[in-house]
Structures are given as structure tokens and as C-alpha cells.
Image (tube, rainbow, N blue to C red; front, side):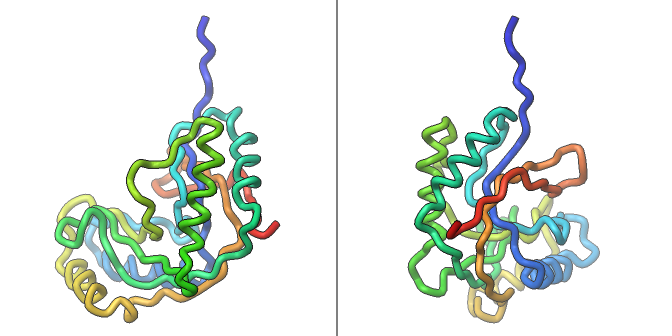
Length: 198
């Protein structure tokens, strides 16, 4: 008789700080207005995804935590600036609205961290996504053509991204996060926390 594994949906990410989340959530709510085409994550769930893992056997949670501990060796806390509004796949057909994440040192330490995580997780069977990593924080998902103010905001940010500034902070905790489908959309539960810099 085959063994049925209990699966949970997980990803590796970093939760944004309260001050940054407040600005991002306010901006997303302003863009949405009263239009139901934009689905905005709950204030407490705004985060930066580093690697999506998908359906994960519960018995893998501990090995993933160990892999993350190994991946962060040599990394201290990372300073970031949240700036600019963008869209996937593009500004003409937005499906996801996001805030940009920049490394003020120009070294792309987040990109280096993502590569280290990918190498460690690959060893236990989790392959990184094929598409290139683009550091961003999801502000809203778009389910049909959004209101015109969304296109206007995207165009304005492309011309002057510095005017869409959500603040700066130091990232210190990496998390394995469970996406809870039994709750409301965008509700996440921390399973493991790993500190950058020990």
C-alpha cells in the first residue's frame, strides 16, 4: 500500500518590517480604491519571496531548516531600500503589482543569498525556479483590467521611481513560510526562522 505524505505549500522569504509594510499597504489600498480587480495582501503578510518551494512533505521541514542555516553562513544582515512600482508581466498587462527592492551598496547581496539558498535546497531535492530572480514585494494581484490610476502610477514610477519610496530597512531574519489555503488569501505562517549573521 503506497504511503501518503501530508503536503504543505511553502516558500522561503523575509517579512518586511512594520513601517515599510504600513507604507506599502497604504499605497496598494490607494491604487485599489473601491475596485475589486485588485487583491491586496493583508498588512501582516507583506513579504519578500526568495524561493518558492510549493508542495512540501512535512518531514522535509526540518531538513529545509538545516539547509537554510547552512545557506546563510557568511551572510550578515542586509540593508535594502524599497523603491519604485512595477508590474508582471509588464506595465501594459499588469497581473502583479510590486515594489522594487534595491541594495544601496550596489552589491546585490539578496541575489547572492538567493543563489546560496538555491544551492543548498537543490541538494535535498528543491530546484530553483527557471526564471531569473527579481527582488520585489507583491503589493497586489490583478484579476481583470485595473482602473486607469494603476496605469498612471506605473507610468509615473517608470519616469521617476524615486518618488515611489517605501523606505529602507535592515533584513535580519530568513523564514520558511507556510501558505495557509484554509484561511483567507495571502495568509502565511512562519515554520522556521534563521538569523542572518547567526
